[in-house]
Image 1: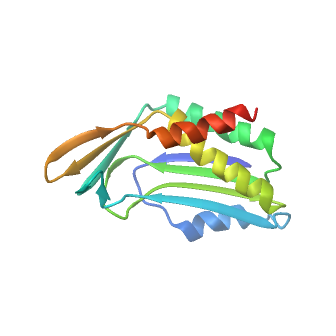
Image 2 (image 1 turned 180 degrees about the vertical axis):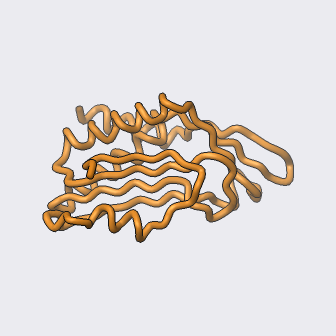
Length: 155
């Protein structure tokens, strides 16, 4: 079983199944930290009916793999996994899941936070929101860029 895993997929995923991957045969981990991102039904002052995510196949996987490897170099990780969905998603649908298992909570928290912050600004995903007034492409938020830059200063 690979220590670092990732999946870009259109299908939904089961959080309990994914949690079991982190725990299966892995009694060394005393901490499991996860982040689940889901589609909001309201953004920038209006109701959102759907979010569509596109990506650059091959490149996206390469970027995410490098982020997982970087997290593994920085912190003591037993296992880590990123799942990111693409395609059309509705309000409350799961978009992204980042999970880290480690012997200690500090490493697990730091690695998980690093992975989601870096993913949001470095991985080639494009988001288009649909609302009653039409469609719009979303840019990365300044706060996301600032957070990712903080991690890069810690190199």
